[in-house]
Length: 441
Ligand code: LLP
Image (cartoon, rainbow, N blue to C red; front, side, top):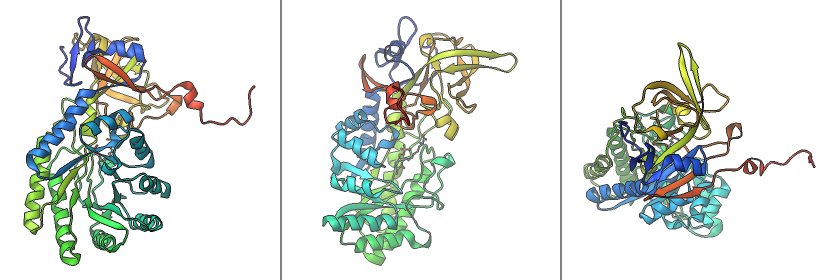
């Protein structure tokens, strides 16, 4: 391939100049299953799981890797990560339900969220959730009420907001003091929550959780997070004899979307977290707890690409050329929401050098529906199959029906074989739950 693009991981090109992912011709997949289409490499998801496990095995005695399911909460992926020995983080009753349908062992599920509703907690408790990550005093009250009624105890972690500002987009920072998530350190909220949970007859407090944000490149922020948590552990050990068995340090490892991105490796990330934990625990003179991490994006992002069909190529003389595809903000809201950048290529012309700079836009009724502002493409024409790599995380997960769009199908490829793991929504699906005011028959 003449492109300098790095993704997809198992990319190749066919004799007739088509992009191939793990032995499957992307143009054929697009024609067979329709577009927009999410295509995932099974191998890459498995490889990422193994990289995390290997990296932590190399630097921690006791660790647990938890897939943050929000990045791609689908049954097939839950089954893959389960086979790879990962645990699962869910953030809603819906994700919990998907995990149950996937047959995920509930003991290995961590349930997060800053406003878990009563039914969601009941649903998780009734279905054997392993660990609940408690986010507020109100939640603690509700959980205790439910547990008292059921007459049983539940393992919990408490989510702490460590006051660390990670360098990432504001919308995906979560660890800063002014945050809706968790118990802050200011005013002793986290300390009070620990005291309260320890005193509860219904809660088994196994440790703490913190997550400072997502798409983080600077590993120093993770080290600071652990340092702050270590101080809290010291304080609460001295004050109430709190013993932390599990320290869940969240997700957040950044990934490479474009050639300009320079994320850390999984090994470096593991090293910073594990060495940080050992050193910080030595500093405060406490035993090293199990370290838990919750990668989402870094498990699935580079495994996935999106294929679109080009519909129109509009040249505005002296201004620019707009290339419109048959999807857009309904299957990838990230450019509009976080100014996320993507690379792009034409799957049926991968053995030619790009010769045109264009703007790739979606088909939605909004000027903000821009997928790639400045794309270098090979003479784009209607009918071309255009591909944005690295769309595996938070694209399908955040897809919508805007403008009556049917959410795309998801296909998983492996050694030249493709399987549909999510069917494309149909026009009937779009109206299936709507109830007319009057019958037209
Ligand atoms: N754990 C918790 C508690 C989280 O809230 C998240 C992400 C993760 C783990 C996984 O973080 P990751 O490894 O994926 O960075 N929609 C945004 C990302 C929002 C992330 C929300 N929480 C995006 O498209 O960039």
